[in-house]
Image 1 (cartoon, one colour):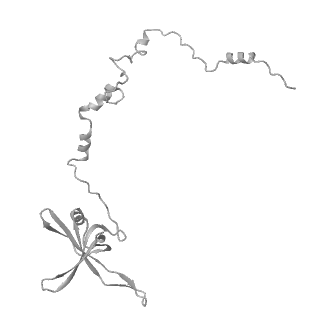
Image 2: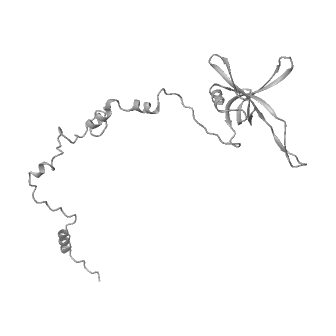
Image 3: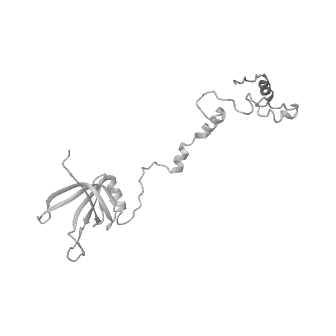
Length: 212
């Protein structure tokens, strides 16, 4: 287990976020975040402000890029990250203490307002219509394969013959050729129930003997 302190805090952005170039290709965004606790005076019953605390929040990589775009001075934010407290000396040699948070997530405090979220997707190098056109069948090969296959399987399997010229089935049969030939009177459709057979079966049955 790593010896580190994780902290979550709610406050407001006290300074405008600043982007700094650490080395070529590497930058971070730092800002001061402050919070002021409030308590109710038991004597007067009024709410009074306590001591205001400040902390420096540092954001790296993609988080820093998004914070620089979305966060402004005065915004209520929620910050989560690793806490670091270190002593240092200022230009005049006066010892001071630096309190920093290496943030891994930053967001707006929705208890104080509303925000609109937009997911940042990686660039594909083409628009949505261009991407759809690139994935479409090239030169109508899939459409031709479906017409030749008859069922659109396109896997080289044998398929039923297509209706049309050159196949074993003549789609014009019964339409154009039927006009020249006389099909004759239509045969009556067979009945589902044969009533004569039912009556013959009833006549063949002997009456049952009465047991008394």
